Length: 96
Image (cartoon, rainbow, N blue to C red; front, side, top):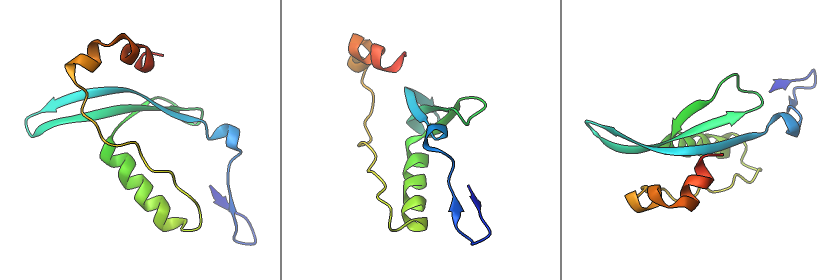
């Protein structure tokens, strides 16, 4: 995103802002367990892995920076259960 000579923001075309989040994985570390998501998009050279709290932080910052623009809420944070992992519907949703 750049500014033009009249100091207005120039946004890239919407077709270039095609991002999606997939493949939630449960990560276990010594300090606890968290869910990590894979972010892919046309403008990314390679997939990026991020935690829920990073998407939450991004949403907060976007709302602060662009107060007149509606930023959708994130889905509620949910832990992935073993039953969900084995559920074929869950598998189909995450393995596109």
